[in-house]
Image (tube, rainbow, N blue to C red; front, side):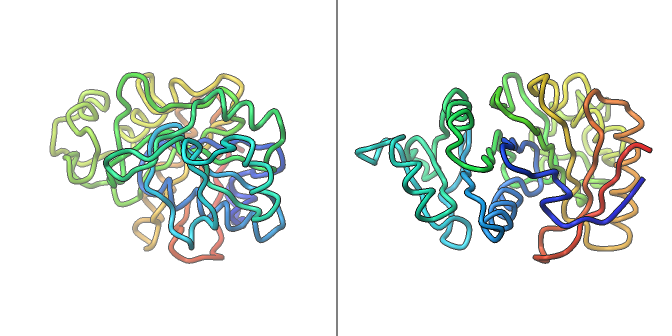
Length: 261
């Protein structure tokens, strides 16, 4: 079953949600797009990471709170959210210019306290590639996550399985059962996303799984993305009941939601 829905409805975003994002091909863009949509509806939204992210631009987040740089630390979160509606929180600044993430336990504490209507967490990195292989111990899923969203770029589908298109391509080839340089098939993407060694393997048991196929910007990419969506749902991964297909480039565009009949 397929249907076109606006952003927040496509990703099942409602009050009390803790959305953790992992994978490649647009996690950060999705995080801030969801935050903008929530803020437009008058919701308080907190964006953060349990790994590392670049500091947000002013068009992405109105306020950044680095806990180790603020005298009140965690106590400042509530007042800043009340004032600005959207707040990005990190633990500290790393020497490489990125922001270090907050502990998973703090994500849970903030969710339990109702600090924001919705919390969105970036849970891993991908070095800008459209597809990735998860190494041991990642993603850094917060146990309090209500939804775990696996992101993949449509431009990876059919592309060579190499380091240009797939982060940790040697590991990805091993997991996918393909030689390096072979075209990325639907089956390979399924294994990397929801297979036994895929991104979803450590997702909290109580969370709901979604896959987002991003960068769908041509009829050919749409056909490939819908083919992957059907393959993911056929694979019968536990708790995966929805695949979202679309592009974040055009604000306000709808998203195709593919679900089991």
